Length: 331
Image (cartoon, rainbow, N blue to C red):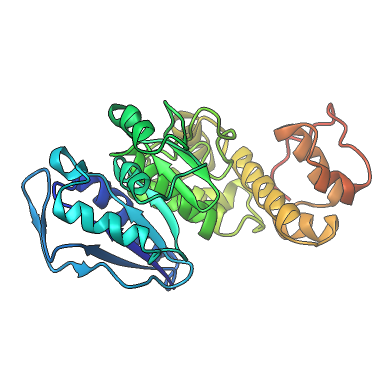
């Protein structure tokens, strides 16, 4: 189990805490034993910027377990002042090396706090747009990037704050527990899985899911849980508790694709994951992902992405023909 440790200061922005905390809590419900949430502070209680007092907080720990996630949350007004007593204590704690074994996540002005603690030197980072100049002043050795949702540099990830803290949490959940878990958490929280402009194209695991139709989501969840199942039109319609023609209509209206195209997309995503994360040969990867053969997988790969990555080509032994298309999803 990985500790997720939130540091709260006076005038903390509640959304900086609540968004990521609920994301990690939901991930824990999907993958039991993955995360344990802790809330620490230099004071037994702090009053948030919205006026709510948060109490029963743990003191700043002498050290964190290896592999912990340390989340520095943002504060408003005087909460960003390094001379404020509680903030000064938090900065001293960061400088002491107590969090040396943790992965650092900064939400909003949590980046400024990390800079005061000497944790952003020679790193790429970001913060809320109103505090970009402040971050540059506090840590001139950092490369501060503007107009980013979040910036990842080794074991330190910083975000623009407020709702961007939720994007940051979903990104980390996807990296640690897999994109399917992150997609499920995003769906429960009714948010998009967003990406910064320089990040890769949206993952196939989260494509076609920006809707709220329960029957379509039920089918998509079933396919994601078992991509290799013999999904035909009748089987998919049974999951949705409707007829095949109506399900096709619902998918076209809400998911902007056909049910069988969605099956093919998820099988492709699963196969792609197996190519990069396993040493299985291509025939076994194809079978596990629900394709009839390695040749079938090659044609589908060509359809969705064109030329495959080198790891795939090395195992196939030849390039995928870019014009060879196979629109069949079942079988």
